[in-house]
Length: 241
Ligand SMILES: C[S@@+](CC[C@H](N)C(=O)[O-])C[C@H]1O[C@@H](n2cnc3c(N)ncnc32)[C@H](O)[C@@H]1O
Image (cartoon, rainbow, N blue to C red):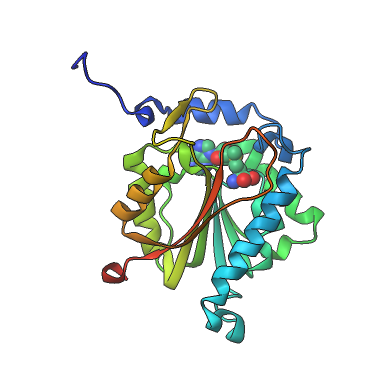
């Protein structure tokens, strides 16, 4: 080992430490939102995501006119207790599959959806990490990844996004909603063994995985003291589609 080599922040990520951490967190909105569940954050986040999704849908008039795409299957990655599916994705998909490796969270998903009479929207619950998830070919009109991609090392994130490409229907999209650092540097967080990435790092990774940015925006109106939260809508690069 070269003692002078400075390790990248993502080199410190441990997938087992991350699962241990999340398994000890209450399977509640407050738990998956790091104690911000009782603030304005969940409502503001949901409103922002719905507005972002609607704006993207307007770029694809076929979705709304025919209801074809609008009515098909989505995927919620790093889904936690299914908060995003319950409050956002269920409004845009006829079925949602959820990817969540932590057992108590995965077990809570059905309860959350049932509480809002949304069990008919529940597709498959895949109890695996993103690093081990391969979607079936052309299954999804979109894949939503929120507050979870920091759990993957860069190399595994690129591989995950490449596998997702094959899981998208024609013109399918990937949505990412994640914290950004306020600098050009990524930062390791030992609490949940994750990295918070700079906007530039995400853009480099999306490019490496064969995606281009359709739209991006910063979530407005979040409580003070949080990292900036950015949404990205990604489509396949022309030569890759
Ligand atoms: C901050 S919570 C966000 C949950 C949900 N996306 C939301 O916004 O409500 C992070 C989630 O990522 C999950 N997670 C941790 N490591 C993961 C991995 N390797 N693959 C997929 N999900 C992971 C955690 O179990 C947890 O549910």
